[in-house]
Length: 64
Image (cartoon, rainbow, N blue to C red):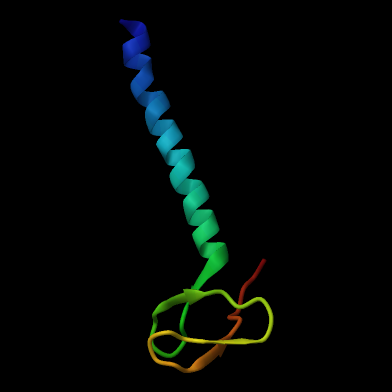
């Protein structure tokens, strides 16, 4: 009976770790377009074009 009760917190902890890894990856990979606010790929070098408004954007301010 104790094993069944301890399974639930372990499952929740596993889900929390997976969500944290996903958020970390998402914030490192994506940014908001400064013109229209769409979610776009983060720029590492140069400029990219937004898929929604078509305007170019570059790397935003990040404090690493």
